[in-house]
Length: 164
Image (cartoon, rainbow, N blue to C red; front, side, top):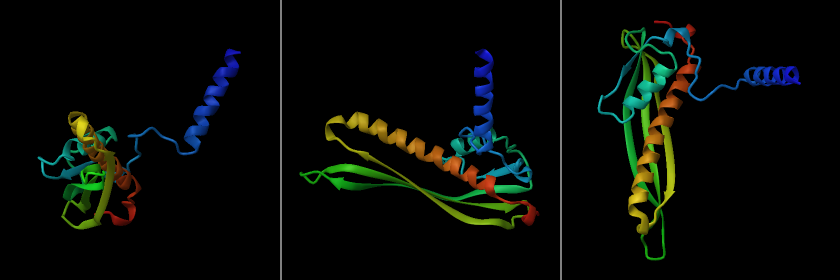
């Protein structure tokens, strides 16, 4: 009985890895990008989530032949719907970040890419404190998701044809 469970567990693990499944945050980064410089405004809200995601992906951020540069970022909040009293009933948060990859000699190897993320939430004027906390959580999630998507793009980048 134990042998059957062990064999079943191994088969499940093998089938998951064979289909390309991997845990969120575990990325296979091309060897040329495993040492990478990060250029962004240190006061950026994306700085910490992006730095952590890159480090968790096995990237050394001290030196490298390439530099990931955050060109711009912008967070906006818009009213999406109103209630019968013309007060905001739903908001949408928009986070846009532009980034590029440059070689060590400052040549662009991956042109500016734009990433746009959004989150919507219901707004209730009777629960202002709770909604403020919800908005802060959604904003942190936007930054974290942006960091993961940027690393996913790096994962797909082919450095063989663009070596500096």
